[in-house]
Structures are given as C-alpha cells and as structure tokens.
Length: 210
Ligand code: B1M
Image 1 (spheres, rainbow, N blue to C red):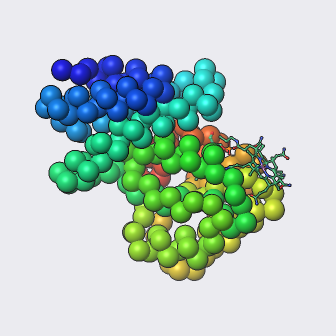
Image 2 (cartoon, helix red, strand yellow; image 1 turned 60 degrees about the vertical axis):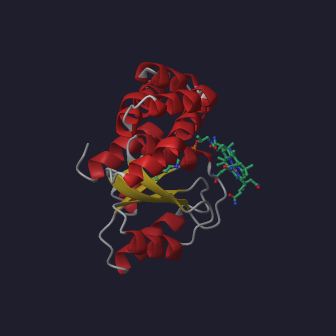
C-alpha cells in the first residue's frame, strides 16, 4: 500500500509527478481520500510551511511543494466533495484593483488549501465590488486581500470599507510585501499575514481554529 509518509516526502521535494502517481496508487489500494489528504499532502505541506517560517527554505521550494500538493488534491477533490467532508473554512482571496502581482497571493492560497480551507481565488486587479459580491454569494468566513504596490494599498481600505458598508460579517486579512501590522490596524483589517505561513495561522485564528 502506498505509504502516506512517501507522499508527504514527495510533496516536500516538490515532485508533482510522484505525488500524482502515489496518490492514485493509494486510492486504488483502498486508502481513504481524507487520510491521504491529512497524512500525505497536508502533512508534507506543513513541514514545508514550518521550514519556510524558519527561513530554512525559500519561495521556489514552497511553490514547487504547493504545485505537487495541487497535483494530489486534483485527484482527491472530487472524492472529498462527494463524501461531503467539510473544509475548515471558506476564504475569498484576491489582489486589489490596479495590481497585477499574484505570486505571493497564489502561495497564500495554496497554503490555505493545504491547511484545509476552501479558497475562492478572484485573481488580480479585483475591484472592491467583486470582493463584496463574492463574499455575499459564497458566504465566506474570511476575505484575503493582497497588494504589492504603494499606489494600490489604499484599495485594501476601500475594500474593507465596502465590506463593512454591505454589513457583511466576514473577517478580513491583508498581506503583501509593503504591508505592515500598523497599516492593517490603521485600515481596521482583522488580520495581517507577513508571509504565507503566518497567513495560514492567522486565518485559523480568525475562525477560532488556531
Ligand atoms: Co512589481 N513591484 N511592479 N512586478 N514586483 C514590486 C512590488 C516592487 C517593490 C519592486 C521594486 O521597485 N523594488 C515595486 C513596488 C514599489 C512600491 O510600490 N513602493 C514594484 C513595481 C513598481 C512594479 C510596477 C509598477 C513596475 C512598472 O511597470 N514600472 C509594475 C506594476 C504592475 C501592476 O501591478 N499594475 C510591476 C510589475 C511586476 C511584474 C508583472 C513584472 C511582476 C509580477 C508578476 C506576478 O506577480 N505575476 C513583479 C514582481 C515579480 C515584483 C517583485 C520583484 C517580486 C514580488 C513577488 O512576487 N515576490 C517585487 C519586489 C519585492 O517584493 N521585493 C515587485 C515573491 C512573493 C512570494 O512575495 O508577493 O511579497 P510577496 O508575498 C508574500 C508576502 O508578502 C505575503 O505572503 C507571500 C509569501 O510569503 N503575502 C500575503 C502576499 N499577499 C498576502 C495576502 C495575505 C497574507 C500574506 O492575506 C490575504
């Protein structure tokens, strides 16, 4: 039977082909999708998340691991949704209007998925109205807002204000290279993730699962 440890190791090495093969093999041999997710994919991604936090590995390794995790997730997702297994929370994620930077946001999204969140990714150049509309429609728990430019950071404030005006009870989390805790406090964001690993911790905290 394909070992979960082996899947975890292949995620850590970013070997997406092996993750895909081993995940399929584990399914074929009767492993539960939930066990493969927790003991293989998420376990591997957690190791990488911890290493990243301690500066023992860097962005390229995280992106490779995330891609490998996604390869396994693609096989598990239909089974997990079929059997009604629930995500721990729902996050609407996007880069603000006027901003095309998405590498960090994508990393945050993948790490959130790895931690068991459902992520609805609105992409880049996302107007505040789109955040509001999606949060309302999808009944999200958290809105994750990313911005990388000094000129687009005010859009984070605009988005948070639009969510408040729409009276949506949703937690807000912001991040991006130039964003600080101070800025997050200034614009009344509920959380700030300095990097993808902290963003995951913060998201769990915001929904009371930290
Ligand atoms: Co741009 N760019 N860029 N750029 N770019 C910066 C941000 C810049 C700091 C470079 C510089 O001058 N030193 C500078 C901004 C300066 C400022 O505003 N003060 C800048 C500029 C000026 C520009 C243009 C205006 C350049 C031009 O055209 N004249 C232009 C703007 C385009 C636009 O958006 N409208 C532009 C364009 C581009 C590219 C398209 C070439 C490319 C983006 C490609 C892409 O994303 N698909 C690009 C890149 C790659 C960068 C740098 C070099 C790297 C950004 C990156 O991906 N880092 C960047 C310099 C830098 O940041 N040092 C720069 C890796 C990534 C993993 O980190 O995004 O910080 P980061 O994400 C981290 C954390 O911030 C956090 O977690 C991530 C993982 O740890 N995080 C969150 C991010 N989002 C989060 C959300 C959260 C929580 C945490 O919760 C929701």
